[in-house]
Length: 452
Image 1 (cartoon, rainbow, N blue to C red):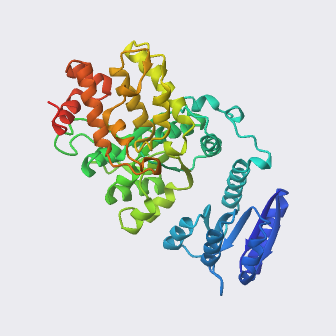
Image 2: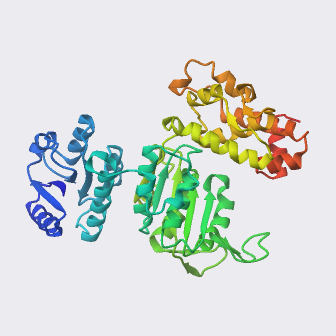
Image 3: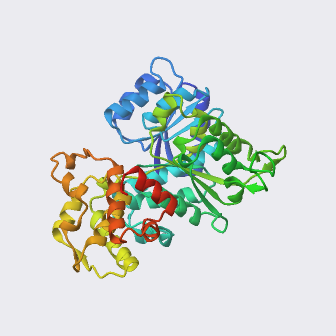
């Protein structure tokens, strides 16, 4: 059974929680009303989950969290507080708090939090008997687009299956190119909303005014150029899932409107006074440190807590070294088919070079690297000399294995576009098709990088 420790200076709350949890038959419970004894109890490492009050005399909840963090204790903490203090909540989450619940305690909300926490603990500890593999997934096919044998990624898949079964908002953390949208699609496809639309939007791709009209839609005549009614992203996703990538790029006024949608489950089109009820699940993703953005005043605290009900953190490719050859082989097959080529394998020098590279652009960069190399390779084996020059030059940098990368992703993009143009004999229509962008976009990039 899951072992729970409750620390609260209010004995009546301890009694209530003790009875509530023991009645389930799933937990053993120890209570502590004197927080000055908390450190001694925690050091024994006899508990899996801590229910922690924040407002206590002498030794506060924040003191306890700091102690757990400093001592690197393996215990899942759920904070209980009678004060809605967003700054305190952010500080608690920075110290590794699993969840944050307000008093009076909502019994259903608490049990849901404990259920998810218990499953997370079970999955995180192979010694507990949990066999973590792709074969133990209930919805393995929904992860078929994510190429991996990495144990941490497979654990994440198990978490995704659990989160998908609720309607909670999910916040996916990860660097660009780590596969955040693929995880969002998996959540949607596993959920009860699978038969409805999955709408993906890059929040960073729109100016504030344009995003507002695209997100909420508009009525005919709402502004110059609005010649007919238009559905927005949120209405398109009604009944389904709306995936907002790069949520940290949203301007504050848009954040306010998004928060209202989450709270009220309704919105107004531009140019309309009629509210539209909406039933949509929001999955957001970010490559930014939203805690830092909040402290700078760039992201709303209340919106963060609305989005971060369940959280998934994707590892960068440099932490998935074993997946690099697997992914490279996958992309080799993909581009053989796309270009009608017969490059049968990657040479050992190429595989060794890929393994020791930091991949600042993650999986997307690896895909583009293989794509670029395939275009110029003339043999049946992908050789080192076909790798992009920026990559080969970086390999001479002694700091690479430490993750220090001196070249920007713009350099990667420029080099790739240059090689595609050579491959197509400067046919911009073919080049744009290979790159997966419009001809207008390609021309803009050619001008930007002075490739003409």
